[in-house]
Image 1 (cartoon, helix red, strand yellow):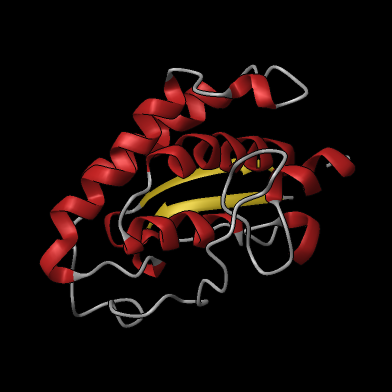
Image 2 (cartoon, rainbow, N blue to C red; image 1 turned 135 degrees about the vertical axis):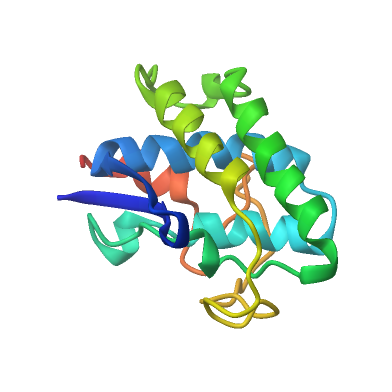
Length: 164
């Protein structure tokens, strides 16, 4: 069991184990929560945080890039933000907040970056581009980890309390 992150229209995908997925999302949140400034950027981080296997179950949180609520007039800026988040995560930004050293997440981040870089907005596919597939419901941050939380809590706190 695991999760797949895709750009289906281009046939691109990245499969990760459940543990790899948790690490991947955690390091993206550590970087992105510090970088997010605009409303969309903050909502993007909450949306990522909501892909929490401790809440929804192992192997259930993969997504396609078409599920992101890209705003067509802001697409280039939004895509650049997501690429920047990946790049900052690759520098091991705040990885010391984790209680482990993730050995393979850099490879997953690099592969995901290739998929995001290839992504193009197509207004004829995917869910409505102005709405999130599941609406971010909080813009608060975890006091302990200083990352955006979703309606059910902090993805990093949840990951530290379970074994995937």
